[in-house]
Image (cartoon, rainbow, N blue to C red; front, side, top):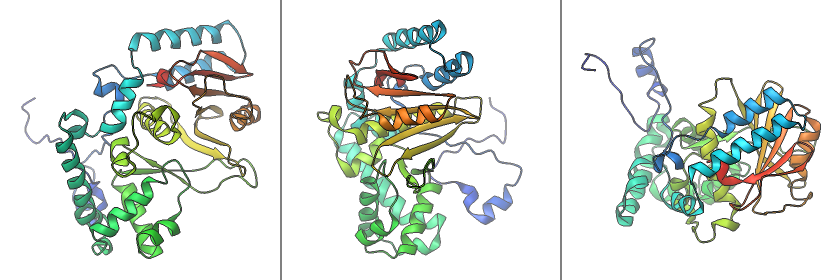
Length: 329
């Protein structure tokens, strides 16, 4: 707009973490977290409004099985067919991620060099900008720590295990975790405590599947049977869609003492969407027992099972619906 004194600066650190910068810019700065490109953005498609549509249906139709609910399912199915996203796109996104350079680079060597440079800079510079006591971590131990953290994706955070694996003190490991959250590399999702023996630890969620896959090397060929990379891709998409919702929405997860899990619980007041990914076209009651139990315990909720690409739009149970995972993308 050619107006003076207007700047848009993108970077890898929240500048207000530094006290002197925070004080200098008080009242004169707006911060916005710029998320990695979504799968739709990488394909130059309009954003998915899946979560928005789910909540609109939940508030307008309640929890009854009626014609409005069926109409909602039909609308989602129609929108899904028109977008044209398929498993090939998802497999490519797994290896590229959503960071600008690797996402659009056609040269695998350039992508490899970019990732190496990114993590070296993260360890030697960015961590220290957040916490000066992390200056002595070093690249080898830092990479070892990040590799261990990558294998905790979608699982409960275990700081002791990370510290031991990277030959770091527990205090240092906790400081690195806090710094990675501040640097927008990971999220820590709080659990929804529904029973005395339920999980009470925070869950690790990487913000970019490409950065995660640099350490885990998941292949697109075996993606159909791998829940961890699929869950991460969906988490990355849901994080973006949460930013499009007008109402404040909380993200929690639930895991029972016997291992049954619901990785995505999105709440708006007393209304809730509970979602899980299962790579089965006809999941059994046992496979979605945690989801079913959550829906039964929460009258104003709907459970959604995101199945394989060829899964049919089906009502499996009272307020439990099966649909292909690509509908969310």
